[in-house]
Length: 462
Image 1 (tube, helix red, strand yellow):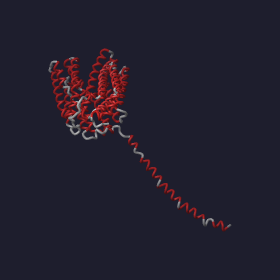
Image 2: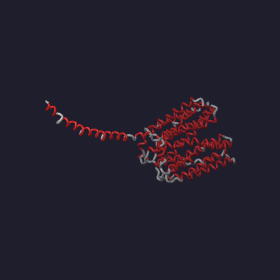
Image 3: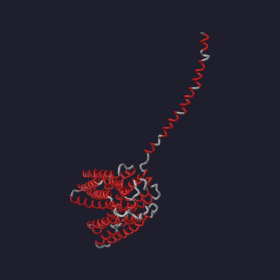
Image 4: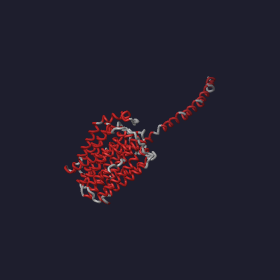
């Protein structure tokens, strides 16, 4: 027994503790600290780059646009020349009405200019496509300046009324800098649909800013300086901006002298866009008249410019957001949805009864404007080859201009024959008509997008 107990710690006892302390225990902590634990923390930082994408600035797409050399230069030059576009009509009407004391004559002369522009605009666009922007825009703006100068002299020195109509016709061939800037963006980002979408949104915001600031500037010049000051300033700005824009030759799209024959309106989908823009222009023109009448009926006629600016501000805000987000669905579907939103947004204006309710409703109504216009111009770009792009965009914008003039005339008749608070019936009706046109032509808006390369020989832009 004593020998048996003494033999246990000598042989088995020391061998077991030695095996536990030397072999397994040091090896396990080493394996845990060296292999698994460092590898798990290393995998977590590897999956962390997702949050920076969520924190990306919404202005990043716009900064990307102007990273292209020469983009900022032609944009600023065009801005100088695009501001007068919204000054011309107001300046002409105020000048003639003040000096000749006849709003009827002023309206007739202005309507003559719009009618001639409807014919000359698409023709100038076709010439720009064929011979280049600078070769057409510079002579055209010189002709316009000559006609505007003659108009000012005829009004100032009391020329016969027929001379005013001749001057209006002679000064209506205004080069469309808006269409030419869009053509430059399309050429610079020919293979980048996301950048073209952002550029179209930015251009719509510029349009809204010009239409918000131009009439106010013209009114101040014509009433506080001289009746002729508005038209003189508009002509000077248009000449300066066009010359500066034409000087930016490195971003100018190359002309395509061998353009396809035929009229751009032979494309069914483009006719749908044109008619939709025609009705949409009627919404804009009648909305301006209705707002001035409604604000006047509330006893705050001096605030009409500020209230109208809210509509443009809503469009600017929506345009910036729309351009920063990737487009969803088809362009035709977005156009129908935008026109539907515009028609719905106008209806609450019929219930406004004071400035406190009218102002926010106008801001909301303006938010449907920019996405609709942006999508319409996107469709024009997709429907036509680059050789007809300026002509197509000018044609569509001419339809918008005719719609604005027609809507203003019909809106004025509504204000005269109905209560000022009922003046929003005209834009509501025009918006419903725009939706009906877009909805009935939604099939045409989809089909040509798949057949553009075969029908027009384009390079198949997405």
